[in-house]
Length: 84
Image: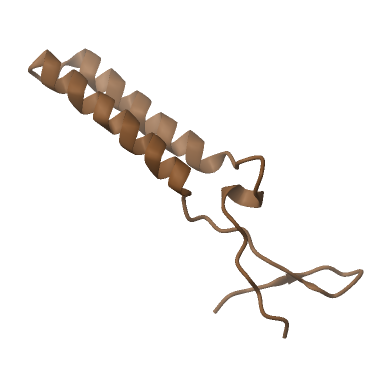
């Protein structure tokens, strides 16, 4: 069941923001993970520097997911809502 907010002045449905990550987010996370794995392979072992890089990858993924894109509300296109 999808909840729909309405504007009090016009009583028109206002679409919800979606929490689904964008393709841009997936591309950024894939790129940072690839760099992480290359660094790990080059180091030959899981050491302190590689774990620090992993913390950076995780932090970057979380921050880029939470911060919306400027061109779309919430980072992804809004869900289409059928009027009731």
